[in-house]
Image 1: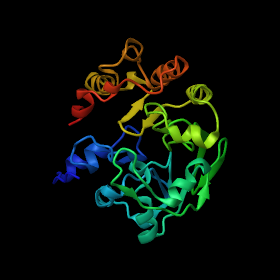
Image 2 (image 1 turned 135 degrees about the vertical axis):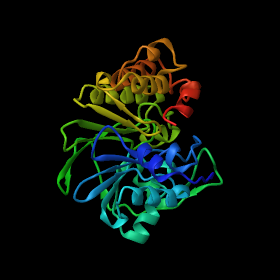
Image 3 (image 1 turned 60 degrees about the vertical axis):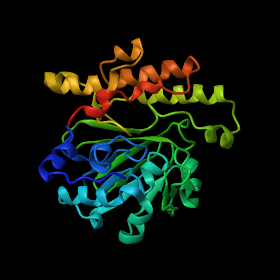
Image 4 (image 1 turned 90 degrees about the vertical axis):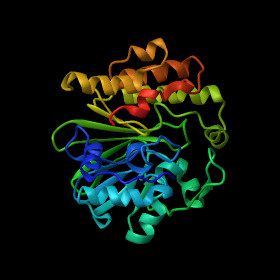
Length: 295
């Protein structure tokens, strides 16, 4: 993993989102030396009493995660839960050590709980073993629960993994938030087929149905697993910010994707592709703009 010394002010600026009580504490700009990699998944700190981590990044970027938390004055001891969007190592690899050292509970959907508790070799890099983590709580489709002063809602969308979920909550300032992990842009998981005993076409349609359900919910910000938060109301951004967001997410995509103006249209594109029989977005989803925007 590439390391770099980052100026604290620059780091904090990169970690800030448009939502006052959500910080980016993982991602390619923050934990992998500014280089996009399979281990640079986003991790988000939702500020509250206690704080909640939505995904926590790879065990390979554990030290950088702790550094990022310290930059915003957050101690790991003040985190009440690691809430997982799914079980892939770039999203939950650090959970085992967070539990071992700080006793932070871990929650995930039953569809991915077995893999999380067994540990596994990463499909993209078989030499990398994601350490097992004991599951403290199982989260289910349609569930609403409190963590301190905040309510979270769970929406199960199998496809990228058997237990992939979207997580909804509301900012103290009012905006409604949706954390989607990899369900909008991620590739299709063969394991989802094996474990559910359904045809690939049935699962693709269910994935599309689930995305339609989430797409029709009211939310103001969509936080993806490998890019910056995508704001629904682009009119609240200045011209440069719009260029960065839209350029990063839409450049080099097919004509439907190039026409997207917000996170929900991004979901629409994925739904369209699934219903047409495409398992994943084009390979050039991660464009040069994605690797340079915001630096």
